[in-house]
Length: 238
Ligand code: ZN
Image 1 (tube, helix red, strand yellow):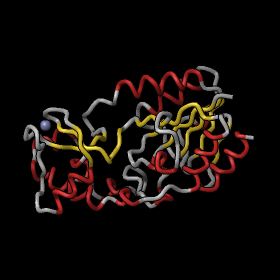
Image 2 (cartoon, helix red, strand yellow):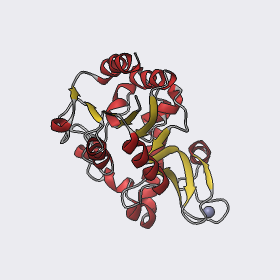
Image 3 (cartoon, protein in one colour):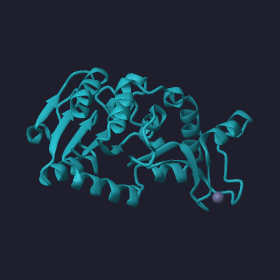
Image 4 (cartoon, protein in one colour):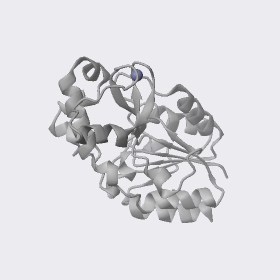
């Protein structure tokens, strides 16, 4: 049985990482926050970049620890049942829990890497934040002076093509497709769930709120993710 799992913000809320887009998310309270993660504003406005770096410095995801749901998915992999782990999250918690990085497909990138928009040079968030601590408020690329950003996909940027292609392939060959903690309302997550069903996979939705794909799902689980996922994995891995 080939299982592909897709995770969204809901799997990380029990690790203390807020769901910025969710019903109680930061963006509902502070619509201005969206500018911090929109590439056009980010490139055009140094003030937005300064605020973005401050936000990154205080981001609770930096010291978050994986929870029982992340660990259960590692068990699924060790049981030889997990094909690919597609995630909309940028928090790296699947890898930190012990998932094989080769199997984790990060649709929206990763917050712990930094890239220069000028020369494409790579560095790390830790390096950039060390420069913040040393007094810089908008650190520029040391090679070319270009603007630095994290290796997350901002609004207005394209998704990483190869990652999406790999996610599509894994979805097409899945016999079971499990969507965890995602509202299935953002592309390409929504289209992957639809594709899985079209290809005959058994769709299992684990999410507190209803999703547009609940009717197509073989099973919908509303229990808290930290309890529901270990239980589900025990069943799927057995
Ligand atoms: Zn550069």
